[in-house]
Every structure is written in C-alpha cells, then in structure tokens.
Amino acid sequence: MKKKMRKAFRKGRRSSMILDFRTSNFAEIQELFYWKIFFRKNVYTHKIWNKNRTKSKNRLFAFRNRENLEKYLKAEKLNYAKNLEEKTRLMGEALGYPDFAVKDFAEISAKKNPNKARLNFKNYDFGFDGITFYIENLEKMQKWCEENRIPFDDSQISIFENDKKRWHELSKSEISEILNEEK
Image (cartoon, rainbow, N blue to C red):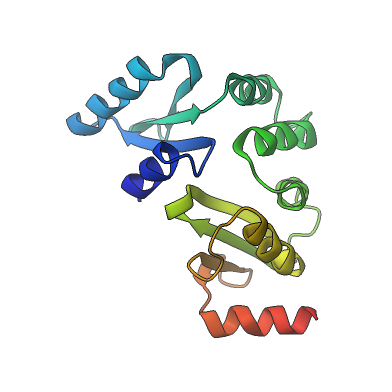
C-alpha cells in the first residue's frame, strides 16, 4: 500500500499523501527522515499514540503545494468539538477530496445519522485511502472518479455494517446493484 501511495505522489496523480510509520521499525524511521529532509517545506508530521499510550506511530502528510499544507495546519489548530464542519472542510480541501464526501464526513463525524448506510472509497494506485460518504452519493463518486481520471472499477469500496460495527468490502456486482437502485 505505501509503495503505491508513494508512486502516485511521485507521478503527480495526487497532490497530497498520508503515510503512517511505526516507530519500532528502523527502515520506516529512515524513510520518514528522508521525507523530512527532501520535502521539508511541504511536509507535516505528528505522533499518534494508542489509548494506553504504550505504542505510537508517526503520521506524515506530504503536499505538492504550500497552500494545501497551510490549509491543513490551520485545520489542525481548530478544536474538533467546536469547529467540526470548518475543520473537516479545510482538511478535505487540503487533501483533495470531493465536496460531497467532505459534507457527508462532517455529518458522520457529528453523528447526525448514525444508522444511515455509509461507504468507504480506496484506490491506492492514485493515493486515496478512506474517503467516507453516504451510500446515495455513490454515483457522484463514480462521476468524480471519471472527471479526475481515476479508474472506478479498480477501486475498493466498503460498506459499514451498523449491526456488526465493521466494514465489509463490496463486490463489483453489489456496487453495480447499488448504482442501478439509485437510478
């Protein structure tokens, strides 16, 4: 996955990239320093701890242009509880996510419709990992992929099962069935 994400960023398919590095792996630490040295003006890193604060990982955000990094840093400074929509909007703009997905994610984060079906879009070849949106916007996601020349058929789409509280990957036939229901 990391290899595909790096390749998408290098080839210009993505204007931003997010990578996670375990602090226990020396090779990953070396790569983290490589990113910080060569892309230092457009890179932001922070440490993420687990709930018990026993293990941590470093998350690296790399951006092609400085404006997106500044938007992301502005969003990082905002309080999640007080400015949820503004924070989500700025992060979505900085990471290049579609507008409808950013709005949906803000609603999901605010838990306005907790039982509403939601999907997750991933395409590692183009550097996208985890765009979350409501099921009725699947057709919009397909159009957005066509506009940005991202192969929708090669993407991985998962649905959140509310009763089991887990993600389930959809098959191509299930995706086409959902698209046909929307029309």
